[in-house]
Image (cartoon, rainbow, N blue to C red; front, side, top):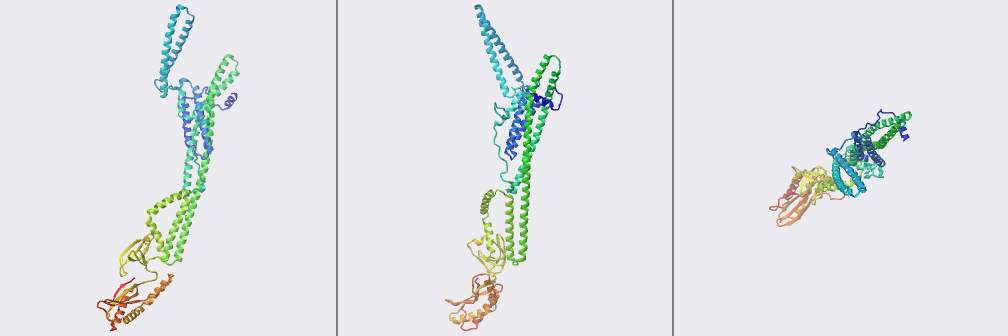
Length: 604
């Protein structure tokens, strides 16, 4: 005790008060502030990523809470009873007074009973009857008084359960302690034995360098929020430390004053008995003040330790925030650089295509392939930059892809068909094709659709545009396409000679006439055929007029099939018809049947 006195006396004086001037409101306010601080701390103690720090914060804060209640109870003994508030129930004071009077009545009656019983033991026989009657009367009164006492005690207990039975600072302390059960001291138990739910580990499970931009953004926001929570709690802890310092000041002043007074009494030469009485009073008061001072000082140490743990947690969170921010910036720069490189290569591809690919069709194909490749590369780079958990991404992408495959079945099939259409034996703008019975000239080939300018039976434009889905090539109906380099069609001319005509002469004359007509334009057909042969790997015989003679009921039918240039088809038909007429008219042995005039139709 002497060491404590010396240590306290060495502290600088804060005031000259001879007695602690702490009010009841100061004590209750301090308890409420400590309880709020403890609860807030339990709400954010998981903000730290260090398990050891979280556990240390919990233990130190719980110890500080329990010491606050120890101080409050010790301080309740220092505050004068008349300065303490009474129960909030308007009738609680009367009940307490009635309870005291009932207890006094029971005590007085029991004293009277003991006196009568003592007299009864010594009384002669003539007085024993009167004393026995008096004893029975007192016993009846005692029973009645005890019943009254029990009834009043029941009312007091009921009033206390409603919150008005407890009076004074001690009752308020008990009520506040019941609001935080973990703060209650158990007999022989320590603060570490209080039950506590295990804290969840909120630390980042994967290192920042292996996380994507989305994960890093989440880390930055999460760490910033947790750091703000801990900073707010540190401010609240500083406020609690200031409150403890304010409460310690009057206690320190009284201890210093008591110490100085003890020194003065020891140095005086007055009455020894009076000095002894004053020293006894000072000693008793010192013990009471020490009971309040010690837990308050220990609480100050516990709260200070908690603040140190909070500061350590703030430092750790600041490091985590800086690390996540650096990796986020690095990932963003890497993603931007990757996209920049992809776009640069895309521009190089585009310029090389325009410089080295002269064929318009091939150029469009290369540019279309460039768009597909560049788009896919950008999407892949973005996914690699933003996403971390590729297993979850693969599962999610699987479900999404399955749904899209069902919903976009036809468009996907059309896109796949596009690459078949632009292949080596595919179609190009300007080709003449027949799709689902519609003949037309290709005017555009898109990723999903193909556009045709419809051609009539004479292969002239009808002025209508026909649109087909590219997926039509996967349908059972055939797609007919004009081979590249070929610009001719096959026409068939049919005529019937009379039955008395010379068949052998007719075949010779008519075939010679058709061959002569073919010689006038056949060289151009041959050149087209040579161009066609260069684009395929199969030998195809050169196109030449073909004739056939057969006998029918109407006469001798002569059929000739000849190639005709598409743009000169009508002139070619006229030339062939004229040659046939001239051959028949110039030979008397050949005559037309009544309905055997030549008829021309397009064979293919």
